[in-house]
Length: 378
Image (cartoon, rainbow, N blue to C red; front, side, top):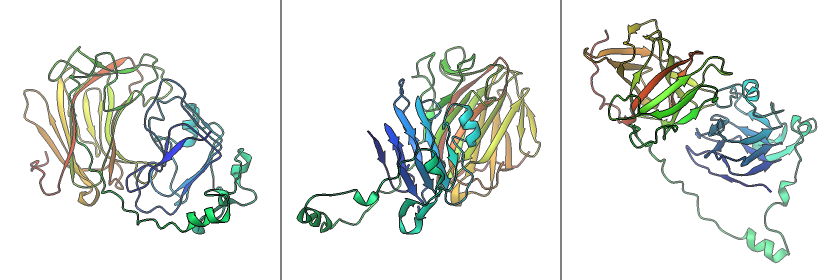
């Protein structure tokens, strides 16, 4: 049985997986300014709830996957993936080989499926299609739809449908996460969490807090399969305006954390604002550094225009208790192609037994021209 649902429109995913998809063609090669993921899992469940095998997936813009693929229990493999625009294909930020090493997409390939005539909507396969070797079962799409006697079929053909009108794009929801209502000992709400559960964890704690009683403790461990774990991500979509992202961090000497914004809107990802903390020192693109206190809360605020309001640079304000705020302006993006904020994350790269804490995470946008003056560059 095949169970799946589609959602079409600017900013919407193409396919939201909710059950079993086998030998299906998921092709939207002529998509316009759609900047959502091609295949999305919206919720991870404790049991295996999704099988995604022997399918052909072709699209033009946006990343291949989004949502809870990293945490959901799935069986996926023998799929043929192809980006008709020629953009590099990544799976949750990783090339196919690395994604397969993590236990996903076994036997899948990235290759042109060799459709007969994509421009005219003919998705039959030409001889030699690599999808056939993966076990894809071709089907006659012309047989889909109403069937029966001639009068019944004529009734279906005579239906006049109203012109499709899409709802306006939903504005992004501002995030204001203090974790005071989150249960200690459990992952924080409002984020996607990626851990290996081998001494690493991301859990709400009452050990310390910048304000209130609770914060998020990010615990790293040595010998993890992926050095970029544990990973904490806020998924969003800001395509215009000036975005401010503030948070409190408390780090140790051994902490190695990267905080960055990413743009997954056009396949792969482009990193915009990026800051790193190594041995209790802040490091920015271009070599700028700043000493940070160990085991004390420090306030960070990233600000940048996005989309048409981007100036190609960003600013950072760092507030250490008892000191005047340090303001860094005109900072370069890690990738000058960054435009749309779809991902704001914290990556612990320590490969050692160490912890850091996060509190009071906010992410919000305002119209261009209303941002406060951040002062002179230090």
